[in-house]
Amino acid sequence: MSPKYPLKLYKYHWIDGQTPFVDFDKHIERLNVPKEVVDRFRNALLAEFKAMGWEGDGELQAAFVPVGALGNPTAGTMYHNKQGNNGTSFLASIPSLDDAPEAEYCGMSRLHALTKEDAFLAQGDPQ
Image (cartoon, rainbow, N blue to C red; front, side):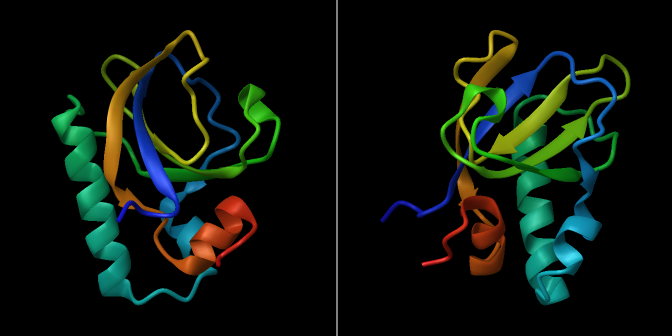
């Protein structure tokens, strides 16, 4: 069974002035998710970024992408980590970036939105 809120993986050049992104922990803290669940999700997500070529620097961030942003009909959560030495951004996103010319699609994540609450923030419908 495929997850209801799948994340697509991308490399993107270059996201500067990361204003829509907030610290991952700030994004998650309002969800009241057990620390061990958050840690497991973070570690799995960073492992996927590492498999895509991420070298381990930068801070994990998150953003809510509203409907229509990036030309996308789907709202959703986007997780982001920008590599310091070359500016490559590693993204896991519910909204598709397939039409963004700078985005390199790297496959489907094994993960999905962290919780029903996160899915609600991402999609507006946790059911």
